[in-house]
Length: 140
Image (cartoon, rainbow, N blue to C red; front, side, top):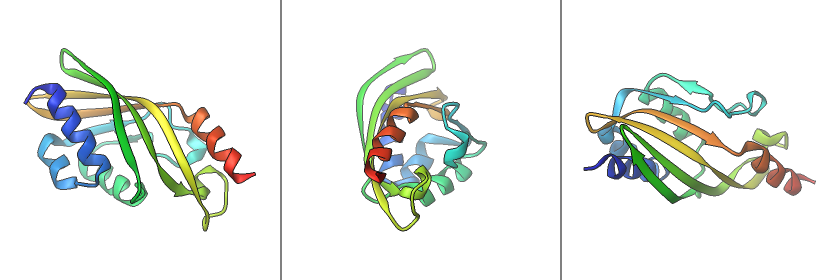
């Protein structure tokens, strides 16, 4: 598999909650980071193991979440994915009531570092201001 194949398989399995497939292509000590995560959102900005990241995703990824890889390219040991993610989430992540769900639409870049056929670093850069504005319009 090429680094691009590995990255796409990893990402689609991750958002499909096919965590065994994720484990097959990601290193156990993989680092996840999201330097664009807003502190008040409760989103993780860094997790230092695959197990911690998958636990986080299992608890926070909605059943109706879908991902579309819009564009991708590989350069050296990095793969860049431009993605669109849609689904629903608890309104509490956006300052609303916990018992309400809101539609979410997020666009961003994911940079995956591949070493010896495994994902060793997953870095997200999402447009959180646009996501928050989209959700805020639903909470009015």
